[in-house]
Image 1: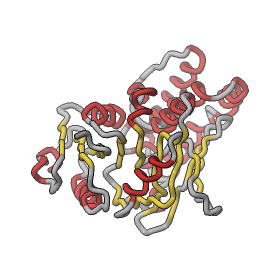
Image 2 (image 1 turned 90 degrees about the horizontal axis):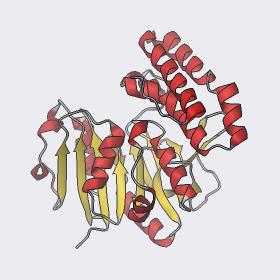
Image 3 (image 1 turned 135 degrees about the vertical axis):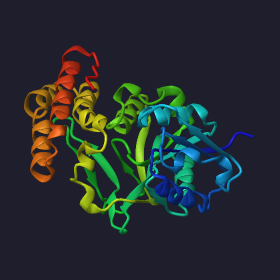
Length: 302
């Protein structure tokens, strides 16, 4: 029998966080799922994990022998999955006991919602996201906490934890691996929107992201942990607006705002943390984004 739900966790060198995430999934009130863990070439104890280490009937663990990065890892998980719904959970989450059940029930009753996810909370219990919107003139992504008591909120992509109908994957495809990481969820959501599917966060579902509010403007958040992220933060923002903005939005962005992002990130990381190594990555990303805007050819300079 085909499982209704496939859960995919992508992970790299975060064994302790992964164990807590898996434990929260196993404690969920929803039990009918296959669990797929994609280990992106870890060097910590994650590399030795076996399905028998997880107390669940249907577990698959794939250990990559070379670094994949997030998008390829997620696509690998999709290829291994069989569920009617595919739920992605980043490894630094502890999900609410009823989160999965709420999301599945929501999709069952809302057939035009193709992608959904939970409201997101910091580890201290403070809610930080009910939905996000991307300004296609400026490139700014803004997260909002809804105060209207809505049943659900439409969102321009959902980071961190989200569920996709198999039907959407069949019609839209998998994630664009050329993006590597960053802006991949909004890109997928906006692509699905062109096919008639909406993306919505359902606040009754909750996840607790193991971050603190103080993490928002550290070098890690600004791309300091992986050089690919620093580069993609700039390049992929322009790619997104080129793909989904109208003519005026694209023109305003590339002339007035595209260069502001690498400049502001440069000032932040240099003044706050002396991370001069990130500066050329931001500007390479900006340059390759502009090349994509002008030619439609997606370059990768790192």
